[in-house]
Image 1: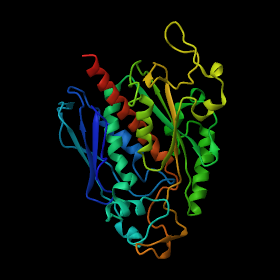
Image 2: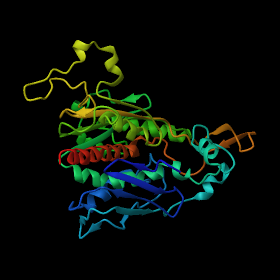
Image 3: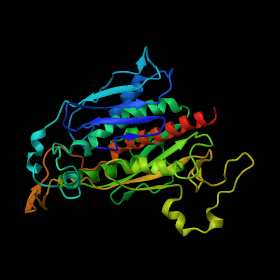
Image 4: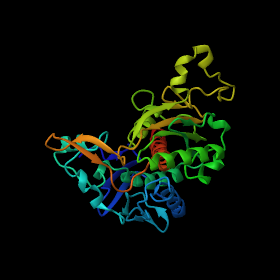
Length: 354
C-alpha cells in the first residue's frame, strides 16, 4: 500500500490499523535541538481522543504517545522521531456483521476491490483512528513553528451555522464546549442537535474553520507546490472531508475584481484579506484562513440496503461506537495537518536561503 507519507523535508509516515496492537508514525526531517513540550503533545491528543464527551464515540483510549527515537534529554536529535500509540479498547466483534458486507458511502467496498482483502475491524487503515498519529506529529510541528499560531473551530453542524467572520468570534470559547464552536450560544444549539441526531441513530456533517496567524511572507512555491494547494491536499486527506476553500472561497465568485482585490499598504499588509493570506501560491504575511467541509459519518445505527461480497442484496445496520458528528474531534486534526504543511514549507524555505 502506497501513500502513507506526507511532506517533503518535514515528513510524516504513519502505520497501524484501528484494531491492531498499535498505531504510530515516524517524523523525518525535524531539526535537532528543539525542546519538546510533552504536556502540549498530551493536550493535543486529549482534544482528539474518543470518549471525551457524550456527543462523540464512547471508545475509551488513553492515546498516550510513546516516543521510541529521535528525542534525548527532552530535545530532538535530528534523527527520525519514532512514536507509538497503543490501541487498548477495541471491540472487534462489533464489526463481525460487516465481514462480508459493505457499508454505504464507506471505504469498505473500494478497499476490498483495490486490495482483494481488507481488515473489516473498524476499517483498518481507512479508519479515522489513524489521525491520532497525525495529531501527535502536528503537535511537534506546532512547537517548531512558534510564534505561528494555528486555531481551528467548528463553524457549522448540519444547517446550524456560526455566520460570523473569524475576526468576530471568541477563540477562548472553543475549548469551553464539546462542539468546539467559538460561540457559547451556538454551542448549546449544536450540542443539542447532535444529541438529537444520535438518538435517531443517524449522523450529521459540518465545517471546521482554521485561522493561521503570524505567518511570514514567502512560504510556498509558485507552480505545483502552492501553499494553498498543499493545504488543500492535507485537508482532503482527512477522513470524511468533502470540500476545502480558502480566503473568499466560493463567495469570491460573486464579486468583481475591483471589489475583490486586496489593496496593498506601504508596510506590505493589505487593507482587506480576500486572498486568505496567500497570493500566487506564496504567503503574503496576512492571516491564512480556510474552511473544511466534513460529510456525515457513513456508519449509522439504522437499517440500510447494501450488498455483500457475492453481490447479493442484503440489509445491514451499524453497531458499536461511532461519532454522530465527526466535526468536534476533527478540529485538532485540521490544526495538525495545517502545522505539518507549514513546517514542511518552513524547512524548504530554510534550505532555499542557505
